[in-house]
Image 1 (cartoon, rainbow, N blue to C red):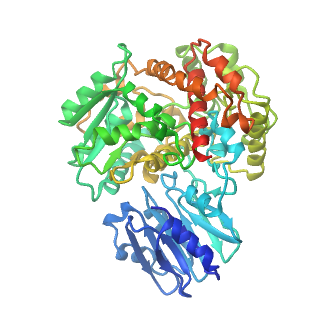
Image 2 (tube, rainbow, N blue to C red):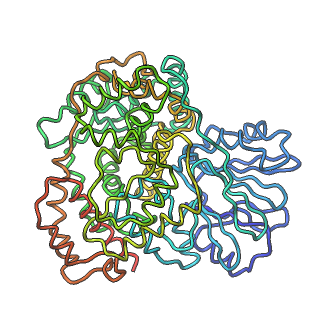
Image 3 (tube, rainbow, N blue to C red):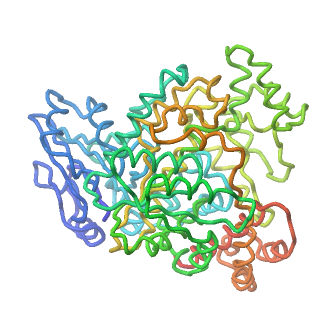
Length: 599
């Protein structure tokens, strides 16, 4: 259930009644008697205070946390601004941290937004909530056409677009920020966390990472009798399951089998399941498609924050609930964010070239040759000296009609959104305006190009995990989480020097060095890598009849002048070797269904 946080001011009874109707009973009150936190009672809450401040934790992860734990961390603190360490300790997983000193409040969510906060001014009163749709319902807000336009592209991988609420008038909080509010003034986004410098080696970090993952798992699994987890055969989920085994936890594991006979992920997943003695369940990857076609998957009920790049992931939620329904599991873990934290990202080669690492030029050349990068594009990529703001300004004036830069664009702070030809000039204008607004906000995540890109991906994964929990069927009792989004795990991984991050022999060198004792290095030196392009084409083939029905006589997206229905239909019949083109069309279909459900 959502929560709403209110300032200590005189509130109109009608507004309080409306909030209670949408959210639930008053959980906590200000000393004046005015409501402070309103919400349902399905999540655990922990309270502590001293002479100057009161602190509240809300979330199911608070199972093992006591009021004494909270009290010890706030002892001697006189201001909510002095609670950075206490909030960092507890605002993790699904926990929200609220503190109050007189009329000033601190509202904080987990670092990478696996649960997130938003706010809006309603009847002159700032309302803070962990649920955008709740604010929308109370205030009677409509979808923001500019944000909806961005959701028809891959722009969400850049945090400047990914943080935007689908509901007009709702403002969100970014990673490493808390809301500072007092009285009836608008909340202020206040930065409490900055990423570490990437200046340490694998040898320095391996033991720390191992303990951090253990800590993240202990925190998340506390209070859960049965646990399930993805076991895809890839490094992130496989390592995660070996970590669970070291803690004495035997999860029920899930593998989605590709139709591509050359995909050997099943061999590695089967081997890991055998070594772990797991209750291993394998289903065809294509089994997600019926759920993707189900009308309920693309509704505002299942997607209260709107359509997104995580559409297919959200469609898998009811499938996981069905497959794991007989196990009694109450927590399903995945390896979200592992690729970004431990693997390669596109800006890595630029950072290596401009670092002070020994043999950096030779290694850049070797990387180019190994990956068959064109020489001219590679030179343009590593010699680019653009900035975060310059890349935003480029998007703010782009027509989105040019050819893809290819390798030459890999060093950009913010990639140009991939815009499908069916998007209208109006939709492209919306994208330009969002980029121009981001220039004014100047929310750069790091001064380091590669760290900034990794953090953008972590926010995208945090958004996905949060939306998975929103899409979960009420009453099933299964929560979703990724321990790789834990602050401790991320901080250690972000500290890795670019010279060691770029080696990738073995793959994901820091994770390989930190792997549990019972896990063989073979998993990190496998010569093959899973490919799921066959599923992309199968998904589009299944969705195409629905596409034709939806767009045969106009569309809701066309009514907003965001897409051309005629263009959607025409391009759906054209063959392309690019799975991305088909994925973009499928996402347009899901957005169309979502918008119709709102109306």
